[in-house]
Image 1: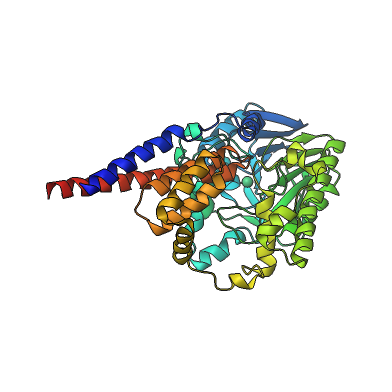
Image 2: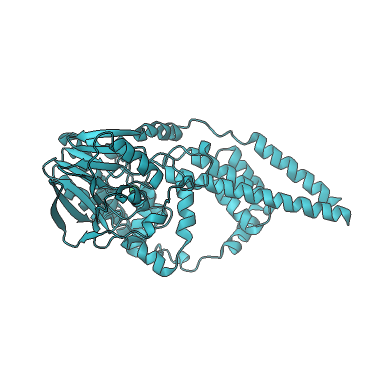
Length: 470
Ligand SMILES: [Zn+2]
């Protein structure tokens, strides 16, 4: 009887929570901006300059074609074979010359998955850096696999279409759509590599320079066509605050080297710029302004973080200390659509000083369960802690609500309400973050939490009916 009463109260409270929780705003400033961003990925073959075309919005990355005397050169191939076929079909409306070479700016799957389509008929040379694929080696060697699950959350791959806007530098995309995504990249071997800093060559009458650079990956290159004044930047430049740290979990991306790479590209004085993602930029002055800002903004965040670290600030303090100045922050191409400044700051700290924030309290912190018990005690019991969490939702204090819910989940891993509170909190946080990777990560976890809570409720129901029968 007592059990039944508690159950009824819980259900009523849950209903209240659902009924009175602030509604998810359809158009917060963050979602409005992110939605407007989608225009950057409208499907189109863009003529960059004479004999150079870039396919935008077909796949995740840009796929480019350079037309030479007796053949074409493809720069990056997109994520999968389905979109690669669409790109090739549209390139074929411009020229029927055979594919002489493919150049890969780096080894990430969103740039390499379409290779089978572009190499099918002519067995072209496939050019890349000598250490192609080196970025994922340490993780594979260590036997790490969790980055795949986190990557799917970051990419929003488990979300229904209406929950995804875009991924910040590309339109929403689902690997399950098919087209051998990720599979081809794993078995892929470039046919031609170079180990010099700069490789000059001529393919199909086109003078090409491949320049090895560091940044997003250690196996990156940019492609410089001196006669066309055109530069293909790969993922060391696109229109967004760069993903200096990917929340799926990555080894340190050398941020200083990244800024230096942008500087090096700038020194080529390009008049046409094709980023690894987002639409091409045309015009020397425009490119110069954008790349100068990009380089300087990255360097600013790095230097300011080091300055704060030298003052003894911890990562949690540094994210408040390092603020991108207005002259950078108000530029659309530096907005945090894809990467996030705070995550870069934390990663710089971690790369140079490791996990210990310098505060001795944190050398051996309480275990989560011990801390949660003490917090509950401090709140005057678990019930009060729960009320505080509910109240935090009502007052739109969502980060706090999520943190309180975490204590409750630690204390009662089988209870459904803390999970539902956390899900509501994360859903609101998602609507208020511009960074698409963070938004996707939040919303995927909302889904996971609601599923888990549903299962818990189903288990409770089963238990209750069993007890009633008994
Ligand atoms: Zn990419």
